[in-house]
Length: 208
View: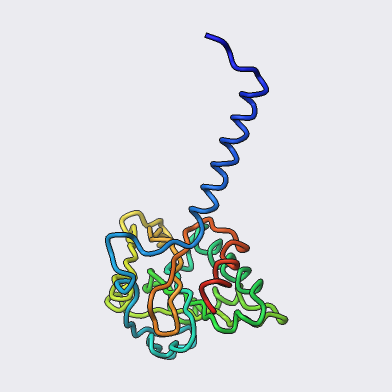
């Protein structure tokens, strides 16, 4: 059997790496609802308390797009990274960002009271020159958070059995960001690891 020339092998390797990179980028981009469900199955009514102590419902945000993310303030990596990505993506949109409200719903209501959310989200406040809105942080009772999570098909589980001596514990949770239209209907979701530019480009297409 004849051996392939080294140059041909190298070209094949480069092509495979490039193809893999394209696949990873496209995989991080906006995806429609899973095939086994209707897009209308994502999202739903909620009644929670924002970082200023005001009761807010999903109907308060009608007329604007919602960018919804579930997480918690003690999250060591995924949550701050995702919120920073959202903030940068919205800053890139310029004036069009005013049509989108970024919403952070805690899955750790026991620790994430309004004052804690307010302090945490202040780290992601809009730049003075940005047209985007500040994050809306939402918390509530265990039952209220569970209902909102079910509506968005979000999984979360607190590891209370692994608490440290000072009471710290971790919470496993889904990490997708959901884009909802001005009528509260599902549009798309973004996976963890998406780059700000990728999210911004997709929002330009889907949040008009």
